[in-house]
Structures are given as C-alpha cells and as structure tokens.
Length: 416
Image (spheres, rainbow, N blue to C red):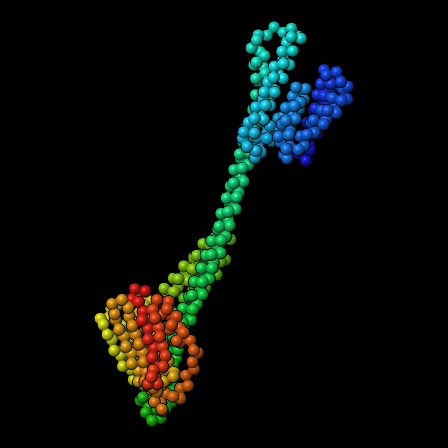
C-alpha cells in the first residue's frame, strides 16, 4: 500500500510537470501528461527494481520531472543489498544530472530575466540543488539499510543462541535423567543389600528360634533378641535411604515448578548435581572396619566363618570400602540362602594398588537346622555385586567350586 500510494503521488506530480514540459517541447499537453503518468508510476516497483527507478528518474531529470521519484528511488537503492559501487555510481549520475540541469535552467532564467547576480550564483545554486536532492536520501537509505542488516544479524544470532540453549537444555535433561537412572539403580542395590542380608539373618534366627524354643529357652531368648536388633538395624538403614529419596524428589518437584522455560538447562544440570549429591550421601555407608561385626552376625546365626586378612590394613575411598563390604555381605547372604550351615572362608587382601576379597563356602551339610527357613532369592545379588565392582573399574568373578561349594571373588582398584 505504501508503494502504491507513493507511485500515485509521483504519477500525479510528473503529470503536472508534464504540462510545462510539453509546452517547452512543442508537443500536445496531453502527450506530456501521459508521459508524466507513465514515468511517475514506475515508483511502484522500487523494492524489486530500485536501479530501474533511479535510471528513469535520471532520464527525466532534463524535463524537470520526477523530483519525488528521484528522492525515494535513491533512498530505496541505498537501503538495498546491492553492492556499494553500484549505489555510488548511480548516486553520482543522479547528482551530476541534477547539477547540469540546475546550472542550465538557472542560467537561462538569469538571461531571460536579465538578473545582475555575480558569476558565483550559478555554481552555488547548481551544487546546492544537486547535493540537497541527492545526499539526504542517500545517507538516510545507507543508515536504514545498515540498521536493518544489523537487526537481522542480531535476530539470527538470537535464534542461533536460542537453538543452542535448547540443545544444551535437552542434553542437560538427558544427563540429569541418566544421573537419576544411575541413582535409582544404586538405591535399588543398597535396598537389596540391606533387606536381603538383614532379613535373611532374621529368617535364619527365626527358624532356629522355632527349633529350640522348647528345648533351650535361654538360646531362644538370645535368638529373639538378635532378631529384634537386626530388624531395628534394617529399619534404620531403610529410613535413611527413604529420607534421601523423599528429600531429593521434593527438591526436583519444587525446582520444576519454579524454573522457567529459558532455564531448563540450568534446572536439569542442578537435578543431575543433586542426584550426584544424594549418591554421595548414600556412599557414606558401611566400611571394611565393620567387616568383623558383619561376620559376627553370621556366626551368631550358626554359620562357621573363617576370616583371614593379608597385607597392611589401610583406609580407602568411601565408595571402594562400601563396595568391598557389600560384596562380602551379599556373598554371606547367598550362603545363608543356598548353603545354610556350610563353613565359609572370607579372605581380604590389601595390596599396593588394589584391594581383593574372596568368599568361598564348602558344600552344605545334608541336614541343617536352618534348612527350614526357605529363604527366597530374586536373582539380583550377583548382578548387583558385578555392577558395583565394574562401576569402580574392578573385576568380579563368581561360580561353583570343584568341591561343590561356591566362590565369589572381586578385585577393586584402590584409587577408584
């Protein structure tokens, strides 16, 4: 609509200026009006063909027509994406044409009116007119074009940054989801270790309690006390783990509710960091220093356990000690489940750059006092041990022995 309006005004202007042009040229005034209408209407294509508009304006300059078309055409040309040399050449042609026409017209008027101005008036008037009709639209067009290109560049950069942020947010969300998955797996292993070991011992003691309740009341009371202690220990560990889960889940929900879309990447990274922090809280679990207490619990349940330690005892990273403890714990739990009453050998070796452990049991006796416990097995104990050891870069091997027993071996790097 703007181009059509400008073209209509330019056509009317050129049509009005066509009348004196026709009179001076000695042609019918109707021809001058039609010529002016056609020439002025060229302005409607200024955006598509700015060079053509400027050339037409230069061509009709000697007829003193197209003043508006020349100004708008130069502005459009300067604001376009055309090379600067083309813009400069056409602007120079327009200025030169206006300079020559103005000089000739002013000189003719001075001669006709017999004006007594000095010789400086002609060049001053010509230069002023040509510069005034060419420089302002040219400079304004250059400024608008440069500003438009700058805005487009900023918009493209903003779009690119937005895409990058979206990609980073997606990657951060993937990392957070991976971290949450790893944390769920770790918590599942922790809960399996706690429940499987404690409850297995409780079931063994309960079976022994049932067997000796009438024959040996004192031993029955002792077994009942052990069952209570183990149950309280299991509940305490479960409460600690569930507390971590509850606090972590509430933090994730609150963060998702409060973080805007533009900060999804930061929220996802925070969720991943929090998941790692919860993992560290869970990592503050049992250590190798509690191995004697663990074996004592198994011995109290009727298992004959032989513990041997090689090398100089020293402390390791929390995750290394916890993993080593859990491997021994799960191996003893499996003996309670599948080889009740079998003698078990626990070997721990402190080496220069690693710690090794091995739990091996003999074949179970034909008749066991705990055989009636009927402990269930979910099949996840060995898998969990292997995952724990592999996560620290260690080696895990398990399998039956030639004597009919079962052996679990693991080696964990000390620098994990």
